[in-house]
Image (cartoon, rainbow, N blue to C red; front, top):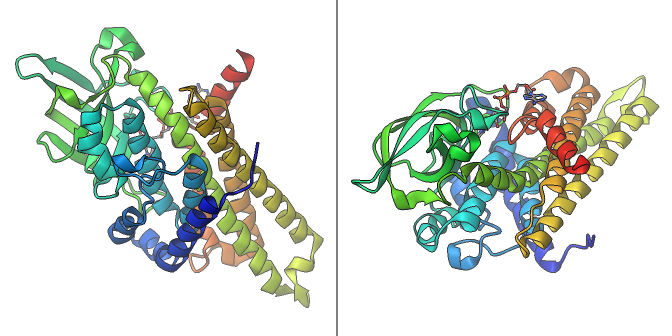
Amino acid sequence: MDLRLTEEHRLIRDMARDFAQKEVAPIAAEIDEEARFPSETVKRMGELGFMGIEIPEEWGGTGMDTLSYVLALIEISKACASHGAIMSVNNSLVCHGIEVFGTDRQKEEFLIPLASGKKLGSYSLTEPQAGSDPANMRCSAEYDPGKDEYVINGLKAWVTSGPVADYIVLFAMTDKSQGHRGISAFIVDTKLPGLSPGKVEPKLGIRASHTSELVFEDYRLPAWYRLGGEGVGFKIALAILDAGRIGIAAQAVGIAEAAYEAARDYAKEREQFGQVIANFQGIRWMLVDMKTRLEAARLLTYQAALVKDEVKKSGGRYTLPAAMAKLYASEAAMWIATKAVQIFGGNGYSKEYPVERHFRDAKITEIYEGTSEIQRLVIARSILS
Ligand SMILES: Cc1cc2nc3c(=O)[nH]c(=O)nc-3n(C[C@H](O)[C@H](O)[C@H](O)COP(=O)(O)OP(=O)(O)OC[C@H]3O[C@@H](n4cnc5c(N)ncnc54)[C@H](O)[C@@H]3O)c2cc1C
């Protein structure tokens, strides 16, 4: 594994860092507190090429590799995990899915505006009764041959950017009798009638990213909006999640780095017993373990990115490195953020200091795009097969 960053990698990382620290970090606490969707800075991410980093330029993207995407996403998430969530869904779950499984007509219509950041995307697999077990979904898509359309009915849950998205990669049952082989994927245009956002979730963390239900009532879309063949939606969903998990690992590394650096700097300033608390071995050992886990998480995430780019050429899967990176980085982020709160003492429990937000934000990385338990199932299946 060659981990040397090229000039191009350093360029996008530094560009993302500059934007994140100047334009995102200053508003992060406020948009979190107000649970306000950051439309302006999301638009800026599009203008800077961060919403379709891996998508070829001919399809509206920036035409860079997965490591570039990871480097940029770490910087954005370090400043604000909500921006990281919005960016990662648009890049890995939506643009990547359409790039790999879409037709040229779909790429022309949907991918170009999504990858260039002119439109925003969501990915909708989960339902209230179908989370870790998405094959148990009920949302239906019935083909109407007279009009060459699908009619969609049902309730989806927990859709990141659901209330603000222009296009949604949706999974619905075209043949309930076939179980997971009866699932198909579609691109939903939120402007068409029959779709409304349901409850917007009041959340613990990533509060500036809006997450909602979606209610489909006789929502009709043209048959050519179907992504891939009928009945292959479940395979598409899982393949897209492999890419998504690298994004969540990067988000976790960004949150972890922010928490670690805040705790390190605080420990060098806060005095107790007549000296800075960084002098105490108990604090030092915490910082050492935080830094070591952070760098291990980073390496697993870089590795997953490099493997993805390698196997992409041959159309292969990268399920194992993506799941390991997501599992390790998310648990490292939660652990590091917990220690950061501890190092801040009472101040760590206050909204006046950033580690309280990092602590709340870190938790989601262990839950979405497959919980830690599901990652362990995926990894076990892979290493034991
Ligand atoms: C903020 C947020 C944003 C989200 N965004 C999206 C999105 O954009 N699109 C989307 O489709 N979904 C999204 N989700 C849904 C997310 O992917 C699911 O919440 C997640 O997959 C877990 O499903 P669940 O919540 O139904 O939990 P459940 O599946 O009910 O799991 C409950 C507990 O049981 C454990 N468990 C379940 N099965 C097993 C098993 N076989 N072995 C061991 N333990 C098991 C789980 O790990 C968990 O601890 C989002 C969720 C949140 C909270």
